[in-house]
Length: 219
Image (cartoon, rainbow, N blue to C red; front, side, top):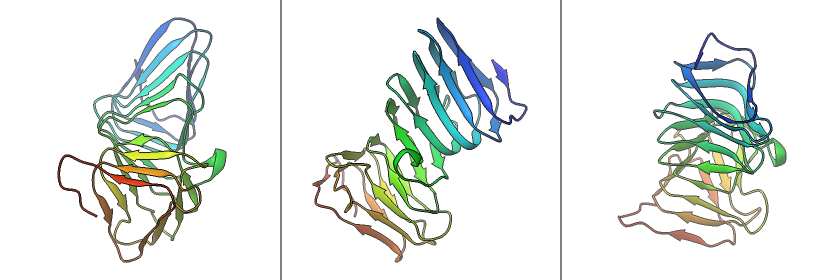
């Protein structure tokens, strides 16, 4: 169990065996955070309060590493990178806010491992052009903090982005464009789509968009 005193950079690396690390209270990291294992480690890091990480959260190393948001604590970070198989983000019902921007390897959310979305809300607030990881989300929101950025859905051709909950574009104030026209991913929307301002723009691609829900959906 670790206690938060406010960290510069935080590196939690454990070796062979099964390890569980839990924060005692909120977590503040003024730099980057790395959760990793060596050898055949099985390492789970669980939040004990809300987390604010100034730059990146990276799950790396060998073995299995899990970042668990605990009792639905919120996470705010510039970016999150699950950089290999066996790197897992378990989001429960948390709100995860990614403030960074970027494309390619610099995109704010990169998943080569596993994202367990649960009933979480993923919010992208970056203020510059960004690519959005193909994966399954629950609620997915594009709410730039300022400027008028373009968020490009997908990172390559022949991908699918799924939202088990709502798909929200715009915060009612800042202009934003979300485009599917670059990589033409298939979109699987199981909640509702909300465009919350006249300056929120969605540009369709040639990929199939599917709406499916057991209840009424709103567009």
